[in-house]
Image (tube, rainbow, N blue to C red; front, side, top):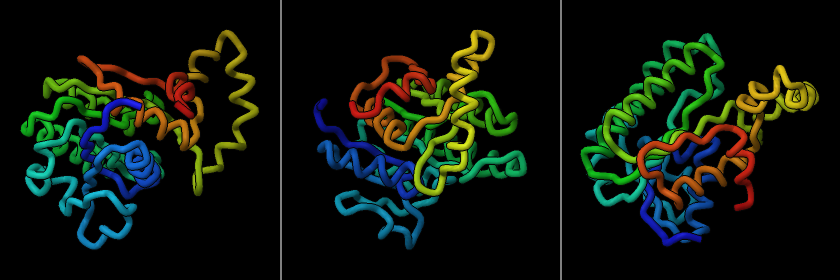
Length: 216
């Protein structure tokens, strides 16, 4: 395990965030997590809550100042084409606020949960988010999973046989791997690896690499 660090997490009470912050604590890192008022008890013991608004960086910027890494997990749950407006008002607004707060505080490394280019409106907003982080000048890691399988997120298992076939056909192999399914433990392991191995410049982690990091 790498040397322990202070990690600030936006989205630490969500589907991926809760497992992620628990694993960071288990590995000896100090964690601060941004939460809405009244949500402090959704964090595991040992995480320092920072009450604020993910869309307004001034509400949490002061707590970012001493962090080594900022991890941005905020986003609309269960993305669908019908939520295009929410992608801009929540996903994009939150990464803009987070990138500004982190860059202003001098954070050395920014980790952003992005997405591959599949659902047009969703992918466009995530690409804009990546551009905002790049423009900040921070070292950054962008992780691009498509669907993360886990509790309450299991219906794509029905597609597993189709993925198995497509990943073995030359004409569809690359696309199937790029938008392949990953499990929650794989996703958490990839995020932890990003924290413990900070990028120099910008690093992009696609699905095949995410899949290969479970258990590390």
